[in-house]
Image (cartoon, rainbow, N blue to C red; front, top):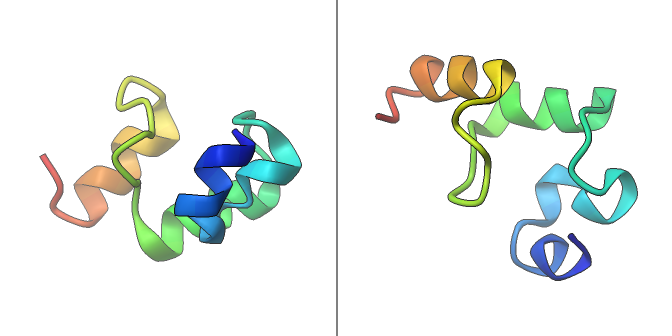
Length: 54
């Protein structure tokens, strides 16, 4: 997750290691999911829909 943070710093992967946190959920709402997000996780799926990402 630390490597992912270097590529996608807005999600704060270095601080929560992929588990949902308020910062991570806020970033999903504001920026949508990035390519490494697991689409089967409900908040990610919802953010993808909100941003029109298939």
